[in-house]
Image 1: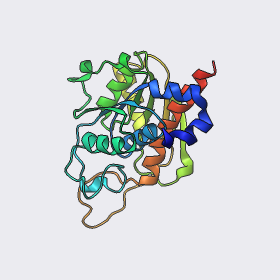
Image 2: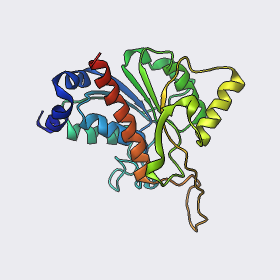
Image 3: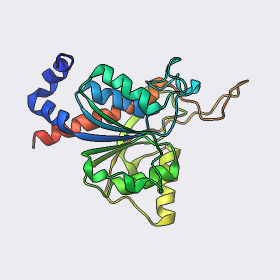
Image 4: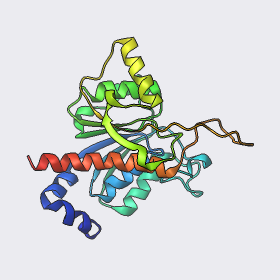
Length: 237
């Protein structure tokens, strides 16, 4: 495809063939997940499953790729799929408009995928996905908390147990230790050790942690980069 020529120049035929064959599932199509998915499709990945239960809301527009004035109210995975097919009409984009949780986890055959990407916000659901994904055959990458950050130079990648300064990672580790349920193997995380505070503002609307697109997008693009780098590394073996 013509739009993949620049990627082909950098990665070569062999890697691009592998990219086109990989099966990826991304959990969460929000501020992090949507940008990860975008980068994957623009890099030549063709078999992607999107999982998210939500609809686009006005508060999503500041940081979520598919969120625009015209998509408010639409199912996120449906809006995202339409956008992705506009980039590559030949892509195989499967959508699941549901929550990954204890009630649905058995319906997700993670062993069917080459890569599992975690961009889930919910603490118990994230913990469950980590446990199950690290027991699957798939390579697994996870995003820690991207809210309350502003400095792009502090976004980093490290192994989960080495993440520092991230409240979400800390809370996950506490849950694992308290419940004596641990990931089956080590896995890489995108995180930032920066932690700012919400400002006191009038008419703030829904109470949530503030977040900015340049940070959430960096998290998502970094996740996509980890996938591409892993495929290139394995191709060289």
